[in-house]
Structure formats: structure tokens, C-alpha cells
View 1 (cartoon, one colour):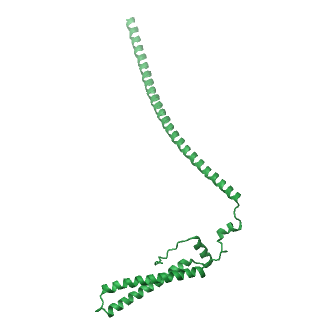
View 2: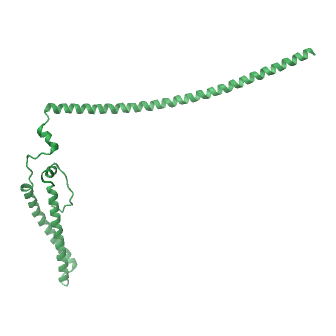
Length: 202
């Protein structure tokens, strides 16, 4: 067993453990292991300081550090071996969850399990829902496509209306010009006729 970080990995067993014991046993084991290991490291560190202070003329700091690493590895191996046995014993004899314990959310499966026909009916209903979702998605995609086409048609209609407005303006302008030209023509003709009549009388 390695030094634990305290992070819990929740499983179905953990859920039942919380319901029955009020906590996750593995979390307790991890905490115990970390505490023991921290005390061990503190004790080794204090021992090294005292050895270095007392025998500083007989052992160098490098030699002490090297020996300390070896001692640390031996201590961790022994702790892991002992703690694994203790953890196994407690799991099997202390934190054993009775088989009759059932979580509330699982109780319905025990009290009223689904029959084969009910499972098939649920499966058929699920497929229908999925088919409806697929149909709605397809209808939405088609609707979006039609909206795009309508948008293009609307642009074309707007362009045609703009062209018609321009033509109407041009026609109106030409019509006004033609009217003015006709009026001017009649004025000229009237003027000429008057001049002609005056010449005849003379």
C-alpha cells in the first residue's frame, strides 16, 4: 500500500458503506496509514538530526542521508505489509456489510422487480422516444433548409421589386418628359398658327 492522498474513489460498495457505517472504511484506512507514515517520517528525521549532532565527527551528512533513504524504504515496506494485513482483516471481520442491506434507490428493484414483458415494454417505449427525437431533429433540419430557401426567394423578390420601382420611376420620368414635350409642341403650334393668321390678314 502506498501513501494515500485522501481522495475517495466512490463505488457502489462505498455507497452502501456510507449508508451502513456512516463513512467509507477505505477513507478511514487511508487516514490511519497517512498518520502512521507521517509519525514515522518525523521520528526518522528527529533521529537523523540527533545522530548527526552526536556523531558528526564519525559520519558525514551524505552518509547519513544515504542510510536514511535505505531505512525509509525498509520502514515503508514493513508498514505496507503490516497495514495490508490489518486492512484485509478489518474489511473481512469489522467492516463487513450484511448482505441484506439495500440502498433506498435500489429497494424498488428488490421489492418490485420488472418482469420480462415490462422490460420489453420499456425497451419499446424507449425506442419510440428515440425515433421521435430523430424525427424531430430531421423535421428541424428540413425546416431550417426551407427557411434558408425562403430567405433566398425573399432576396430575389426584393431585387425584382427594386427593379420594378426603378422602371416605374424611369417610366414616370419619361412620361413627364413626354407630357412636357407635347405641351411645348402645342404651344409652338399655337404660336405658329397665330403668326400665320396675322400674316394672312396683312
